[in-house]
Image (cartoon, rainbow, N blue to C red; front, side, top):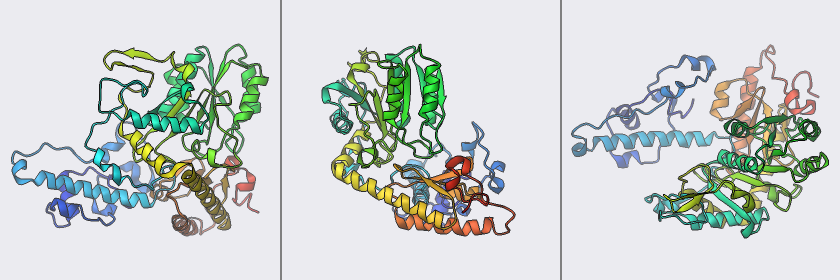
Length: 483
């Protein structure tokens, strides 16, 4: 794998030798120079039999032990020689080379890699921790609550909920937002049944297991959107129990947006009026949908209970984080006094990253609504460009109307999949077109894919996979369905 740091166990001395190229540890200033891309061949490799010939078997508890930088105790004279510091600088330089290279080939996961937070470097020397409730200051004074509440107010306005009617916090990731939203729903309706489409993010089903909730999976259309006819049938089988529903504002694999209005209508017409709680999982598209003209609104003016988004996806925060907003009236059931903090807490975690709110605040102030609107339009245009170019090359592809996720046939070579960091499921893979993905990068990817396919399928014996079952016959260009 080009640019991989971790195909084998690498100790610090070995890293220093590799980074300098002459068997000696370089001076720290030398290690900090702009690196050139590293290659896998430059690294000592402990061959994993599960990686031979593209085979990649995931085995719990042992895979990562073949891809680590060893931690070693300092020698007695390290403080005098400075060799340890120089060696560690070499390891970091080598790792940076890998990051530079992997960033060049990043297409399958929804992270915006286009950001510059140099102005915030001055804050990295502080241990900023937002303990407990964002709206109640604790005894710990090194916090960023004033930034956190500013960010929460911005999202509350976006989703049309008044300041005195909402509660929320900045989470450590999108999954935590889903865990919190489903937990609030369970506290509102302790006997409720959780309904989620089969294409919901795995964290929804994780929440069901964690909270020991009965969970009903609902079928989806070929687009990935929830099938409300099946939803109605399953509601009618459990009319005696309230419903807790996860609505996807962009599914993980196909980027499908569930029809929130139709979900609400289905609930009310099935006799569940005032007996349901809706959590909207908007990890990626929750911040894009408000800027898509044809999209139905996600708003608290509708009977929804909570919305969560990720901060490290479309926004482009360099560390995982997210935003969770719910109605203030729901939160008292979760909240408890914590004397140790001199505060109250209704969050999932205890300590929360106090740097994340500052990064989010910084980006929201720099871009604003108009900046995000421009980026959304750019992503949608580029996604249509990729889909059209794939089709022109004879490659089946699907793009949902409100999405920037392009679904296409899974590449035959797993090395190609890993090189471009594509997310795959069965016979399909996808590219998520983010603000950091430009036309040049898409053309680079397309050229490589077309060249590789010419090799994979040149003899005519091996054929591209049929993806009609995943994306529909009209989007499949296999030998059976191509026009």
